[in-house]
Amino acid sequence: MRVLTGIQPTNILHLGNYFGALKPAVELQREDELFIGIVDLHAITVPQEPAQLKKNIAFATAAYLAAGIDPKKAILFQQSRVPAHAELGWLLQTIARIGELERMTQFKDKSKVKGQNVSVGLFTYPVLMAADILLYDTQAVPVGEDQKQHLELARDLAERFNRDFGQTFVVPKPIINIASGRILALDNPEIKMSKSAPSPKNYISLMDEADVIRKKIKSAVTDSETGISVDDGRPGLKNLLSIFSLVTNGSPEDIAASYAAKGMKELKEDLAEALITHLAPLQAAINDYLSQPDELEKIVAEGSARANEIASMKISEVKVKMGLSL
Ligand code: TYM
Image (cartoon, rainbow, N blue to C red):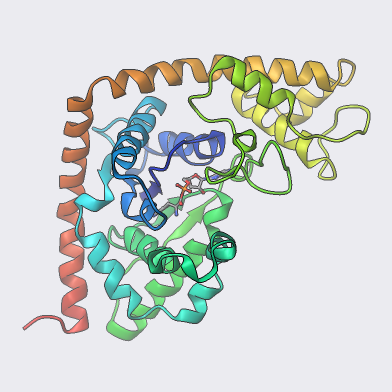
C-alpha cells in the first residue's frame, strides 16, 4: 500500500506528534511504500523566522530518522524541494470552494485571535495538503485525529477532479490510531496537545530535559476524585494513563489497577520517570543526526529527488487532463 504523511517543521515536536505520527510511520515502513514530507510550505502559512525555520527543518528530519525511519525504505522529502506540491496546490485551488475551506475547524481556531490578519496561505492550507497526498496516488494517510477534516477535503477534491476531468487521483483514506491519535494538553485536558499553545505546560517536547518533564507531569491537570480509573469523565487522568501505556506498552486499565492503592502522586512520579527513560535514547539519536548536517542534507536531497520523479509525472498528467497542454 502507498502511504504518505507529513509534519510541519515548527519550533518543537511534542508527544502528540511522536505517538500520533512519528511512531505509526515507523511501523508502516516495514510493509508499505512510505512517503514522509517535511512540509515547510505549510509551516510558512504563519510567520517564521528564516534562520529558525532552517533549523526546524533539520530538526524534523532528524526526529523522523531518530524515531527509526530508514531512508532506504521510506522516502523522506522536503516539500519545498518538490515544485509539484505548490503547483498542484494552485491547480486544486481552482476547484476548491471558499465555503468548504471556511468550514475547516483548524482554520477557524487559528484565525480566531487574528481575524482578517491571517495569511491567505493559512486559509488555503488544506488544499496544499490535499496536493501533497494526491500527487503520489496515496492510498492511506496516517495522521492524528486533528487532521481528519483535512483528509475529508482531500477526498472530496480527488472525487471532484476525477468527476470533472476523468479518473486521475486515488481517493485516500485516513489511518487514525485510536490510542495515540489524540494526546491531550497537560494543562487543559479539554484540548489537544499543541505546538502553538501559549504555555509550554501544554506539552512535553521531545527535547524536554528530565527536570522539565518531572515538573510538567507533576502540574498536569487531573481531578479531585479519589482512586485511579480509566474514565471518560476524568479526561486528564485518562490522558496520563494513555501516555503511560504508550511508553510502557501496558494497557491503561492494567496501569490504573496497579496504581489503585498508590494514588495520583506516585502515578505522576513514575510516569515522569518512564517518559524520561523513553525519550533519552531518542534525544541522543536526534542530537547525533543534528551533528551531521551533511548526512541530513544527503538524505533529504535523495528523498526529494525520488519524490520529484513521481510527483512531476503526476503533475504532467493533471495538466493534460485540465487542458493545460498544446
Ligand atoms: P502537524 O505538523 O501539526 O502535526 C504532525 C502530526 O502530528 C499529529 N498530531 C497529533 N497526534 C496526536 N495527538 C496530538 N495532540 C497531535 N498533535 C498533532 C498530527 O495529526 C499530524 O499527523 N497538516 C499537517 C501536516 C501535513 C500533512 C500533509 C499530514 C501537511 N501535508 C499530508 C499528512 C499528509 C499538520 O499540520 O501536522
